[in-house]
Length: 287
Image (tube, rainbow, N blue to C red; front, side, top):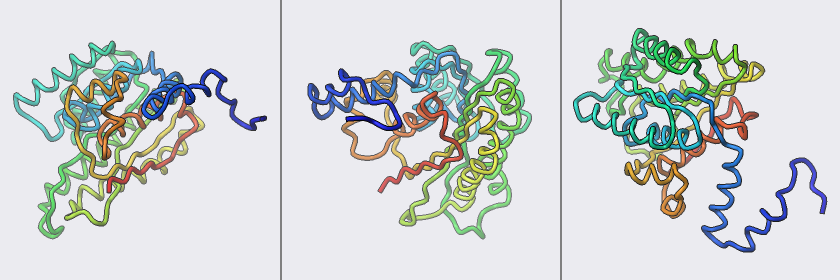
């Protein structure tokens, strides 16, 4: 049989399916794809990356693929427990082999964003990957009851912070002719019990930013994509680490979308395997 287009898998890889069944074949397929997803030498800034959700799973996964990581927190969460948890995530990322910088910065603040970017660039010398994950709070209420300050803060966290991070990081990506921008949006399920109007508007804006800002950058070596998950369950610290290290046994048996699903897609989009995907919106329905 002759194949048109992409090269066929080598015979020894095709025969994997004959030797392995079920989960064994799925694991082998993941490992084959993973060979083209090495991020060694790249530096990723991930906002909102020390809590228990998609940001943390993304930090673990990109670190396991070879990237160095700028961890960020401080937009919505404060207190001593938050600081301790951030340090715990930093230690875990370093144990995965990554160089790590932890920066507490409110992504609603232009001054704090600029200071974070300058600190990161001084520390690593360059920034290659931006994952805009941090956002505002989801509060269900009638839109006429939203205080103006709450509205402005949520829009700043969802939209303005993303814009400012691109404003400060994209020039360096253009100069090096390599960059990856990932926005975390939201797949709005019409069956959700309530709506956080300001929050959902901010997520919708991230989708628009992906196409309007991202497509013109493609010829400059920069891709920009948006992931729109629905309501996504968090996973435990150790489970997230195991999945990032390649122990997929529990993850492959999941019965609903979790944070590592999003992290795997981000890792693919950031890699050379995903270099021709830009301006795309990837939806992950969760019903």
